[in-house]
Length: 173
Length: 449
Image 1 (cartoon, chains in turn green, cyan):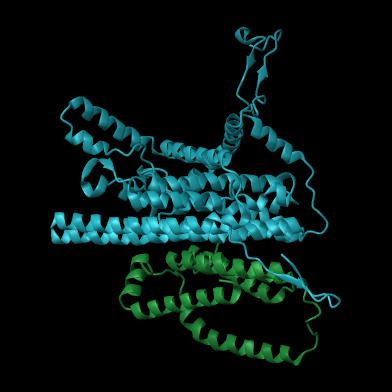
Image 2: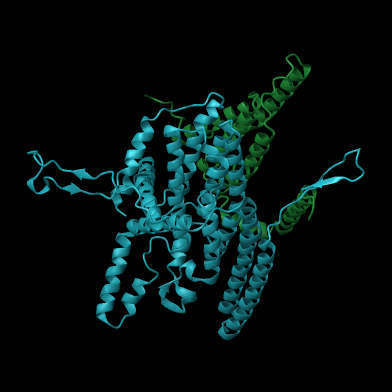
């Protein structure tokens, strides 16, 4: 078996993981069952995390799993299961001008992004982050020095969100 | 370690590292099941499975050695889990007709995966070339992330069963796991702050340092022996039991309320996979527990090297040197022994405590463990600040005074918090809602509830 020379093992891993992620992302839109769509989204996020791992950026990958796969998607699934939507067959209309417009706009975005991304990436065959990129120490240091105020403001915002949700959800405090 | 290992292809090295972690766990899970059943029955004054693997040798056969003829060889029922496994293999695999087939099929695998993957950053021994599968700089965060994926297997199984009890079990499990993850993360954050690194091997190295900033040089600074580490250990232990859905936190599969919870509809091998995932998760979590709080691969909290170098008796020095070498070469066995010990703790807790009520579960997680872990986190930060002041200012007495004062303040805070908690948790805080039924024929309304 003679592979072309430009397919390095790194690129092979990248292609497999990226392909699964893209397929799962398509599945999110295609499936009619809400639980299936949510699961596809989980797979897509998970594959993105693997992609970050394979690029040598462990911190971003693990944060992807903690935040999206571990917390947000569990809540999504929770809500979907409680509502138990079932099939959405009755909602979908077969002939709808929105399909054409949406498809055209999607294609336009694909072309715009693709024209910017594909040319500079065409010659890359060893995708890898520089050593120590996004290490916890670096991220923590910049959060608590350069970006201290945005960080604190964001945390206050989250606190407001928590208090507000308790206020709305609880009948009697 | 050996050079020949480092000369292998990196993919082969990675495969060997994974096998060194996974194969012992797979082999030990049946033993753990047997051990749980025997120990539990001993604690409950029963006998337990002691019959399988009792061989009665023939009295007349020529193939049996004469000394064994007509005798019985007992193995304490050690093969019981194998027999159970064979039984589960050959049982009919019933798939109910109303299940969501695809999700029903993948759920056991999804439940099994995190149980093994959590161990990816556990160092089994001080041999950096072979033992943590990946010694990444985010070790603890990785463990938290993967253990948070454990909820998917349970939730998907509960949903796919298409059964109200299964769904209730799945929902309970997800609520419980999400709640207890917070306390677990906060308790680990204390240790991360004390270590200054998220790497698991760094944590073990930090615990090999001399005790209390070098004041007791012959002891190791195991985090369980420090005040903040002890509190974090208690919080982590409770959260660990809750994360693995074990008694007294086994509400997702509470049989008197939910039949069998999320795995009600599962039979045969699919059920066995859930079962194995639960035990593997317990074993691996016990490994995390011993790595983070109990000094990892070190058998006893003594600095053998220090004792060997400073002891004035050559005899003691020799013994200490021997222990240091033994600890280095037997490290994986010591680590496995520690894991088994903490697994026994799981069983002991199961045999001792009754199952919690749902509101107790939530109030324990949110109103007790999380505040305790947060207060503990602040204490660690203050402690580190005092240490730094002492080291920079070189005025030990002032530093010690400041430290003592801060500890006193912190102690008062903890006491106040605990008193407040005891008041709030003493009576169950149940939300009551009034339903009033208005009957137009009668002037007074009848209140229910």
